[in-house]
Length: 516
Ligand code: HXC
Image (cartoon, rainbow, N blue to C red; front, side, top):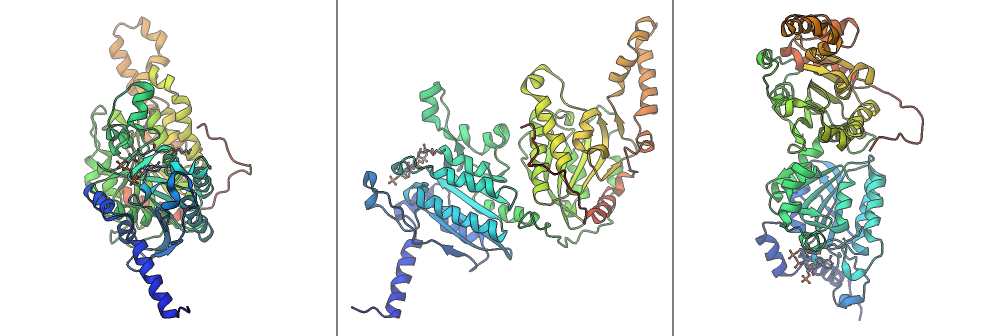
């Protein structure tokens, strides 16, 4: 019997409609009851209305074991395609937990690989919305996940890879998102771990809930795998759009410059009094950041992890920038292993995507102590030095209060490749703090003086006045410009304008060998 075009079309539309409904009504109801949107609802919220083009809707697995020949849903538990997010091309995949538990079989993986390949070729970001039981057990060991890992690695640094864990992310599945650039997690509904609570109990005897093991809290505050925590699916998809707005589509582009309405020459007199005169008293570096960036909008990355250093995106004079700032409120802003890892990773991320790096420095040094030494502060601290030096993007450091020793190099000195170093006039810039320096320099003399404390105080004062002022640093070109705190924003804007077309080549080699 001949089938006419209209009838074929009706069949196509009916089938499409059926496939696009996803899993069973019961499974969808379960998804909603858990506080989660379905895979398709997520895609609809991510993309500009009507712009999403779905690929491989009718792809199916070819597994026959364990009764799987009876269960061959079209789409194979993942929606893949491309569309516009705020007018820019983006690729995305959304795992459908209502179909085969969103598990990753060979077809599923090949669908994802297809769009990752397209994203690389057409130079557009990729967003993965993860909600999956992991590798599909019925398909056996075919190296399925490693196809994804290989794509993630090949795509690294080419286009941004953004992942949202919107349910389960278990087993080998965790290594795909972590090989990308950013991970979002949702409070209460998302969890990621290589082995769940039951396996852990069997192996080590430890008892823990899935949320306590791999929920957004431990992943964002202890493990440091999660970059952003959001309250629900909707907020997550909004936040992904915001993150995309700071990023270029690929390493070949600069990030978009946006008119934010905040005046580039805006000064802030309040900054003059923000640093307490007593060096032992603390202040909130977030207030400095809020003052200098456009409209106070700081999009923090890894806010809950290594809180002694702040990392995040903002705009200054409309330029997208990455900010790394010591936080004196937490551990006096010291650099420890975790803070070094966090900052080094962020330097690298900014450099991958041509985002200028602004550092705001108030750092007492690398953290001394047995546990830090044994944890490997030498190696971890070196990552910061390496990543800062390696970054070829515009780099401006503003010294806010103090910068001692090697920690200044990690935050950005001229010798490490900073393009511009600004300093507030009361800053203390030195090889080490005055008290420590005096203990070394005058060790012998101190043994014979009558009033040791007074001697120490006086010598520390001399040391401070002689060596630690920004004027001394400016005299040896460690500092370029001493500025009023109130003028920090205009100086940063002018610096960014001057550096916008900066080109810096790195020495030729296969690749460097960062101390990982
Ligand atoms: C096949 C799976 C599956 C899997 C879930 N399902 N995980 N099917 N392979 N890995 C199926 C379930 O049988 C069920 O099918 C449906 O998906 C929904 O799962 P439920 O268990 O009913 O949901 P829930 O109670 O919410 O629990 C979700 C879960 C749990 C915590 C993710 O399903 C689970 O623990 N799954 C296994 C997780 C895991 O260990 N993955 C690692 C796989 S090995 P029906 O038909 O009943 O709807 C791996 C190694 C890769 O990833 C190696 C690469 C290096």
